[in-house]
Amino acid sequence: MKGLLSFYRGLHTLSNRQARRKAGIVGSRCGFCGTQSNSKLQPRFGLLFDIDGVLVRGRMPIPAAKKAVEKLVDNQGRFVVPVVFVTNAGNCLRQTKADQLSHILGVPITQEQVVMSHSPLRMFKKFHDKCVLVSGQGPVLEIAKNVGFNNVVSIDMLRESYPLMDMVDHNRRPKLPSSPVGHLPKVEAVVLLGEPIRWETNLQLIIDVLLTNGNLSNVHRTQKTPHLSVLACNMDLMWMAEAHSPRFGHGTFLVCLENIYKKITGKDLKYEALMGKPSELTYQFAEYLIRSQAMQRQWTFPITTLYAIGDNLMTDIYGANLYNRYLQERAARKNPKAIAKMVAATGSTTTVPQDEEIDSLWESELALPSATSCKSVLVCTGVYNPNAEVPSDANHCIKETVFHGHRDFRFDPALVEPGHIVQDVAEAVDLIFEKEKFVPQ
Image (tube, rainbow, N blue to C red; front, side):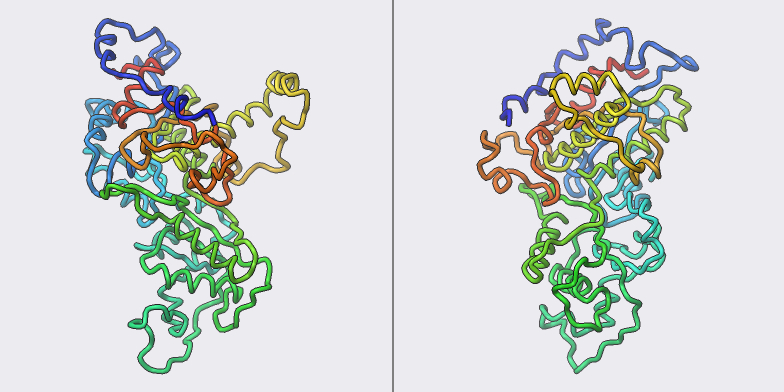
């Protein structure tokens, strides 16, 4: 690991920016390669904003949020660059989150500008007609149906049908002897939308479903492999609300589920897919929405650069850098000169990314990305603590002491190193505009 010194290469003061702009030191390209269409400059970059810890803390807006938005909209309230809000929250519909943001930020925001952790589930069409068990809180049945699932069972429905299964809370145990109702169809897959309210109930019943192959009338079969497909959204171990310290997120619930399953069976819980940041699926979906906005505004130039602004090294920064790596590898596969350069540098072809046999799920669903890079910007208003110590030896218990990412994402020091660190989201916007030489009209 390069250490904290390199983390701070993005830190710089912005105090002299207005003076420089008033003096006309803004460059010749203005972020649009010097081209104009319909007498208006067109952006070549898009912005991906995390929400919790960047724009809000719980229900309270961060003061810099409105300042940032003021820089991003024209006098008609329209965004001057493509903007998507990417959150790992999953307890509401996209439209609900868009309405919340509109109220907090004071500008119109549509659901097409919002990516929830569960948004990519709409691409998993092979599960949409299967009976799926959904876990989370909020309107879980409505959320599941909104993203395409047609046959949905909730934890509460499962508990009502099998009242003897939930026994941890003595006050919720059946008062009289009870038999399973058992009218529910066999569960064929499990969808984890977010952290539930009653963890003990959800953990118990999800394990029951996995160990009975979806039929709770059966007894556990701990040696059966493979288990039912599991799709999980939101891997955040912690998130930032109004409290001074981070709170448990859905990633903590997944840690519990994975360890219980392994303790009982001796085998690892396997996921069909993991969604939400830092998954590439989520960034691919966000990039698709950025492209869609540019097309709706009739901006003819492709959006080639994304900036991801977040407060969490292990999700926002890791995810942005991971997606940037994907974009670079994809470009290398298409560029013979880049491949030759990599071979010359390494002396081996094994480091060269290979073509996939078939297009990936997200590429086939959303078309190929126009972006060629995704740059990470870390703010200090949320989970990230600039005063925390980071061990210099990545091999010395690094996973236990630093890496809060999900079990299935390996720790790579380069992926948790932000491109820039700024104090808040308003400074992030200033930094990006300066780098793109972009001056809103």
